[in-house]
Length: 407
Ligand code: MLT
Image (tube, rainbow, N blue to C red; front, top):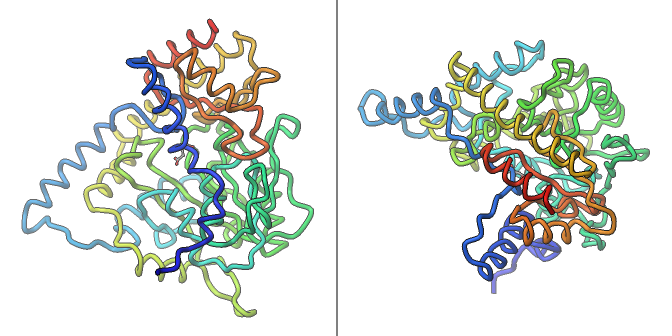
């Protein structure tokens, strides 16, 4: 009989969002026709921007001609997309990132997991707690952790708690770690990092020859012009960081699938004391295991940077951020303690005293027909918190808030 990857057997629960869907389905199967409002998974709801749709329609028509047909594209993405990303997302903000350092992909979730392919097995890994569960589960699957250690934690991982007491700011570890996952604006807490805070991480990483995996999937939601959108705005990041970016949340591409990862050519790891460049390894990995994002979708992503695209995307972000401010305002008025939601599409709520995260989930589901995400699903230190996403229609957000307020 074939041997399985027994690392998978260490996983304690199903992946968080399918697990929530399972519980919601079980509830709706008992109680028919409930007008449920889903503020759980951070999936966008507004239609695709017109600029992107138009570009994709044109591209599909091109594909129907001999001259415009495209077969396999470059595994790293088309040069015209990589160039516009480098210019608009980085060089315009003073960051030294070249088109060649951008690898277009089908999602940040995939990239943040696949990156483990090029990293060694003996790295000491730090994650925040709570954390986007993909970082932990992908390490478990790849055998980079020990066994389950109780409370949803795993042996050998280093957990950096983020909570109200430390202002949801992960503290720099006192020990030496090799790999650090950071996500700002933060999923799930909605916290943001200042330049000074990121500078401390970059200094730590360079001093300890560590690598930061920086997830900036929510950067478009930052409202304050002084907050950094990229780790590459920070001096020294080019020798210690990889960044993940996505078109999912700003341009509504969750169903279309397009993202990108930046690996500076100045970034090195080691193998038996030999210095190895990570760009080269990732390029090798992508050319072997990935055939690139399809042409039509890359044309849609390129349209994000047209003047119409930029303004349509700004309206989408404003729309969701207005939802976030309604959620914050109404929950505060209802007497709850809330965090986040100012530079991120997630509002992080302290559950009322004596009610744990899953009990609060059940209460909102059963009494308000509102689906959220229990904080404990993001890690042990998320217990006692609850996440609501701002991705829904205005009407649904207002109705959900009315229902919660009247509980
Ligand atoms: C979330 O709800 O945390 C997001 O949907 C995560 C993701 O984008 O995969």
